[in-house]
Length: 260
Image (cartoon, rainbow, N blue to C red):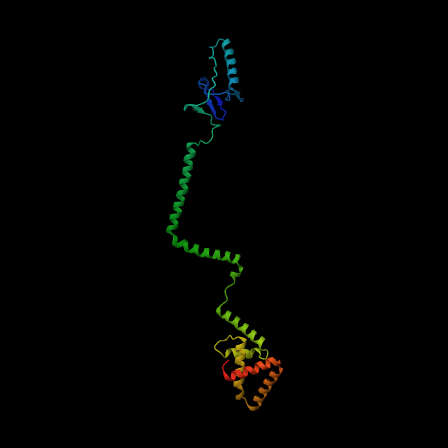
């Protein structure tokens, strides 16, 4: 195998040439002063002038020993206009960006395999959508509901039913009526509320219904019970402040002429 000389240009490009190729490049002036040369088996890079001087010295020494005279080395400095000849061998160690045919084939083989797997998966999913779609939908809804309850704990509580909400409103109405009318106990207020169509009444309506119930119930009592009821009513009115007693009398006078 012919020994290879290495030419390295200023831009970092390296060529591997045999001796005849090196003579051709130097003889045609396709090198410049910044080109360095490395001889076969040598680790050191020499400038072109130094290399030619070493080669000339070696050739003269071989000429005195009876060998054929060496061709005189000539150095012609000229700009490099053309690239390397197609038949010249590039030094693989310093040239980047080239891919071997095997790497290209392997890359496209992987792409084809991935595309085939995706097509098979899509075909299988389309053929059996009635099996996996309900499962995905059910578990997806469960998963997102759990995440929503974790992020918004207030939504995790079940909504109150209509009966529970109505009972809550009824209890609130009972408490409001008891606060406005301390003369009526809780069972009495409940009976007054139950006497109408609406089971939830505001305090004013509870007072009106209770007052009307007392007025209608007095004639049905016997004399002793009616006397006791009137006494209790008078005692209750006497315990009220003067403005409240006047409002109660005005209320009775108003009820005598029109519905309240």
